[in-house]
Length: 170
Length: 288
Ligand SMILES: Cc1cc2nc3c(=O)[nH]c(=O)nc-3n(C[C@H](O)[C@H](O)[C@H](O)COP(=O)(O)OP(=O)(O)OC[C@H]3O[C@@H](n4cnc5c(N)ncnc54)[C@H](O)[C@@H]3O)c2cc1C
Ligand code: FES
Ligand code: FES
Image (cartoon, rainbow over all chains, first blue to last red; front, side, top):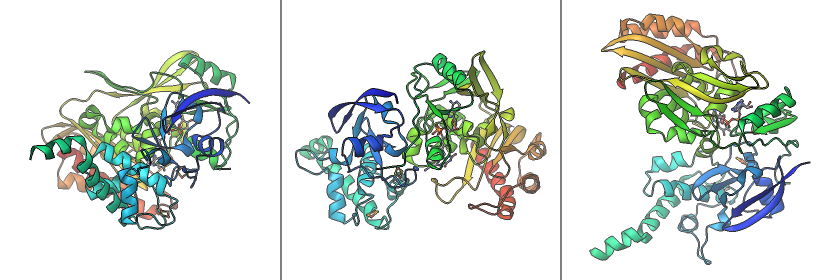
């Protein structure tokens, strides 16, 4: 079995691993690096539980990605969102809105929401629902998840440096 | 264990030459992987490949190049998301743009490729439908060099293509479109994530209200995506109005040979196919 030395970053920490070509990113993150915040739902691209962000804001499915192809890439899992013990505004909004029930879809949902807001800081409800396609939740009925993204959008706008400057002018 | 086990495979070429050599060495036993959104799912479902040759380490296969007056060229690793974000594709090759922008989920669009969609050769492939309407060509590279296959001759039967086992598809080319050419695509699905129960695309070369030339493609009604030539003949040289559209709808419904499956019934597909093609033509006309 051939392995490939692969170097990538997960949540800003560098890892160099010898990885067999056939291992998925999901297997390497969960089984080799014990990052169990990345979830395994279907293994078939349908549920989005295994979503991670690549190079900042691009959501991909770790269950359908070969880990050896991640050489040099920056991967973000949900555990990488908090800064110095503070939750990311999207995480906070999920808690505030009660957008979490069993929590199994939550890591994927949160990362996906972050990517939606990176692209479009003030999305409409339709934009949010469209953006969340590919992430399935069996508990919440999505209503509260959509609300959480809206809440996070407002919170992020209030805390962004541009807005603060504008606020200062008034 | 956090997911199903893939077989051990280890083909990671660094350029096309090396990839073609590897394919030659493992004649017929190696499957090519672009985005993997189809191949890895099939392997999880029991499809057995002795080797998987990933194109993921070959640089420079992700591009959208417009050669003005000639071709639009899309590389084998260009993702659906990249096509959906391209202004040129959106404005000039609207059918392809729609087929990529509505394909699957944001995640599968970030991973899956247009060329992979064509090579997957599914009769319900969304880009297949658009590329057939847009008169595309698949560029293949093998031990004897490059050759180009017109999309009309590319799909041989259900999930089978004209690609030889030692060839790699390196790009898809679409002929340049002029200002009077317009196109559109539409899929009927439960959600965009679902595979289409029916999809259709058209390309119309217009001269005022008159249609000079038309290509009409429809998917999920036969073993491959097909053209409805009788419908094309009906509108060629004619003004597109209620009357012609009515006739087109009727012809389409008699020309297709759909089957029953989990997504829909043959009867429903037959009835609706004419309506869908009519609507796609109307939508394309709005774009002139
Ligand atoms: C959740 C989900 C939703 C989806 N929704 C849609 C949808 O709405 N519409 C749709 O059309 N499809 C859909 N798909 C199917 C698939 O994602 C797309 O068809 C995608 O375009 C395939 O591209 P890929 O690069 O991932 O293909 P891969 O999985 O890499 O390859 C697909 C096939 O093509 C062959 N191949 C790929 N590239 C080459 C090449 N360069 N040379 C030779 N052979 C090659 C492979 O060997 C394989 O047989 C969906 C899939 C999933 C998992
Ligand atoms: S586990 Fe990857 S999409 Fe379901
Ligand atoms: S909270 Fe249970 S799956 Fe979403």
